[in-house]
Image (cartoon, rainbow, N blue to C red):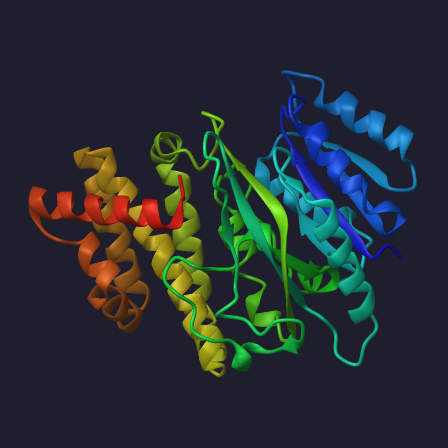
Length: 342
């Protein structure tokens, strides 16, 4: 059995996928690289995937499928994975060699131990086009370092500081047992990927290395603000699925206070992002969609709605009138500068 399976969702990725694949090949025979060609048609993504499978038959596996979107490609990667652990690396991102070696060494040490490692967390770095100073997202003040820990050992997560797809490696069997299936033809499903498995995560480990390099700079990237507004219905779909998931499992989740607080706070930031994008669009139709989103939350769980609506982010996103919306946008821009997103 391989130590680590890495899925690379690819859709017309020929211009940049080689850099990603080459960085992952440095893991050698301990790694299974699953290149998922998600129905690419505009370039030779499929041929590049097959080329690497031919060159590295014991490491690389090429999976070809009809186009179903990022979530569908991740699903296919999970289905094909045979490694003990599983990670997603997007085709325009890459990993750093020295940190990669440390990750693999840590997984080797923890595999087969008295406690099963469910989730490994590492730092990630924003490789933002045009910026010399790279923003490193770390968890120094939140997670215990270099030791196995549980939710009860976590410290308080700051606003806007969460465990994202870039920072996480899951135990493969956990992903398969929890039955996660990301929706097809939908962007922003990475939020579901790092949300739905959490009730099954017991034992965690934080390795303080700058492992994942997250590239931001392409005009067509899904995190580009204009692109996000144009795809707002997909953002809202994911947001509502997260609401449903948290509400439906609330009775079980509240048995662990720290985990429930984390998931609730994560839902809060996603709802804030949805709200401010709807405000930023400036259309009456989208302002109605914002009202409908908060109404949806209220109808699902009045207590959760009241907590979120009375918080600083929920309150700011629901200030009345044009002046209130301008304040909301200004608050959003401040967050952009602090957290370096979009």
